Image 1 (cartoon, rainbow, N blue to C red):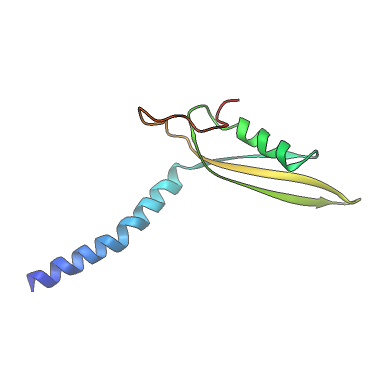
Image 2 (tube, rainbow, N blue to C red):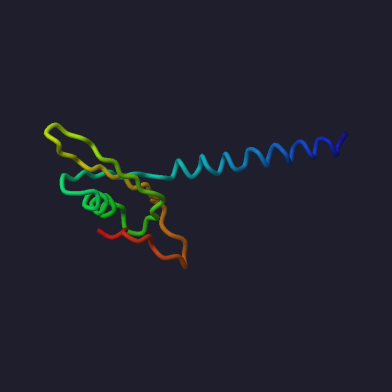
Length: 97
């Protein structure tokens, strides 16, 4: 009986721990967004320049927005971890304004 409880408890921990870690990571993440009428690279560069120095970039996402008259606007978002880097780790590229 005790062995079954230990197995069940370890199985529960194995299932819940990754979910808790994912949730904790999502709570720490922040996001900046920028738009450009020039091109996608400009929007991404602008959003990246708004990431605080020392933050770790987690991901980026860009989209094209169609406007009337066959023109486009480009929107890019950069997700980052605002926590300061641990000692011995380098800051994320694009983290300096």
